[in-house]
Amino acid sequence: MRENVKQREESLTEGIRDAASTLMEDVTKLGKATREDASALLERGQEKAHKLGAQAQAYVAKYPFRTLAVAVGAGFVLGFLKRRS
Image 1: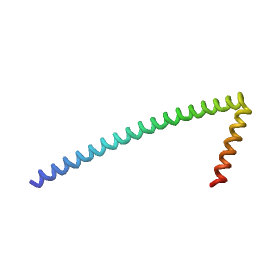
Image 2: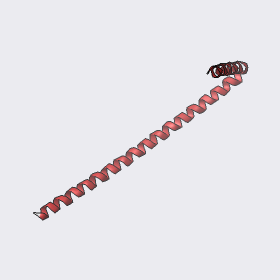
Image 3: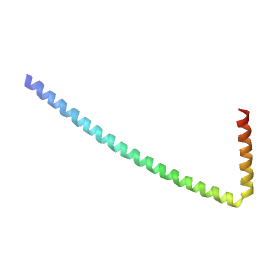
Image 4: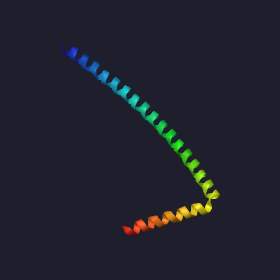
């Protein structure tokens, strides 16, 4: 009887080890996939930021006085709001 209990204990221990190993493999795969997804999103975000920066530079080059007027107006509004608070 003790031998039977010991065999069951060993069987359960082995099953738990196998399950833990499988779980670790799954978590590792999920972590890798998440890292790859985050890297791809970061790359796309950087590309969009560079594109927007280039568009902003082109706009400023095309309309320098309009851009200056908007900047002065925004500064005036922000200064007014800051002074009120």
